[in-house]
Length: 144
Ligand SMILES: [Fe+2]
Ligand SMILES: [Fe+2]
Image (cartoon, rainbow, N blue to C red; front, side, top):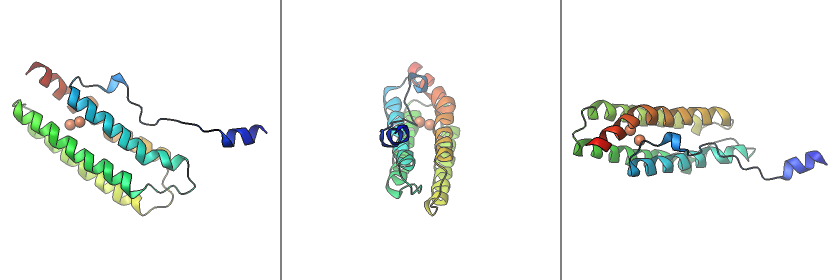
């Protein structure tokens, strides 16, 4: 009885939950980061509710595509405000895109991706950059 109830209950867990802790203080950048959280959530969420633990092509591609758009926006903000770290920040972006594409190419063909491992990977991929380079950029944009 107890087992049956646990099995049928709908559990909703948010893996990429947006919190104020992740804000960098620039409205457009924060909105776009929020969207990246939602896109990352869309990649991992189905894996926890299906027997087939292969990440789907469409949400992975949506995350990569919007990441490129977001990075281009940040790079435009850096140029427009003559940000001194623009070049190294853009290089960091390029390496993040490359890394995500490599990672996605690896998980694409697999039927047994470890969902928790994918969450941990994407979480680090997303949040380490936000807490370092994007936070510094947010501070610059607030004062220039
Ligand atoms: Fe960003
Ligand atoms: Fe950035």
